[in-house]
Length: 57
Image 1 (cartoon, rainbow, N blue to C red):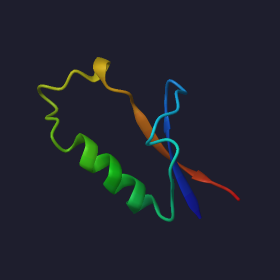
Image 2: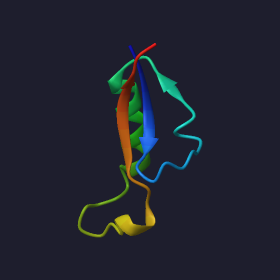
Image 3: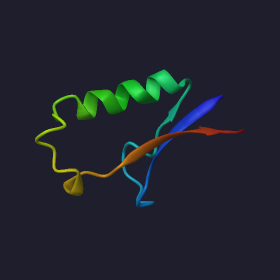
Image 4: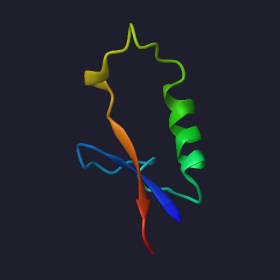
């Protein structure tokens, strides 16, 4: 299985250009990006929303 990260606004960036061998690899990347954001003080309007999807080959 291959996994990709997509943005809900359909824009491509450095994150969406990558492929991952497992869901956990993709999740770990997103976790590293968002680790410094606390839910109570986050302004999600300024950050894109990402989703991990499975890509069939």
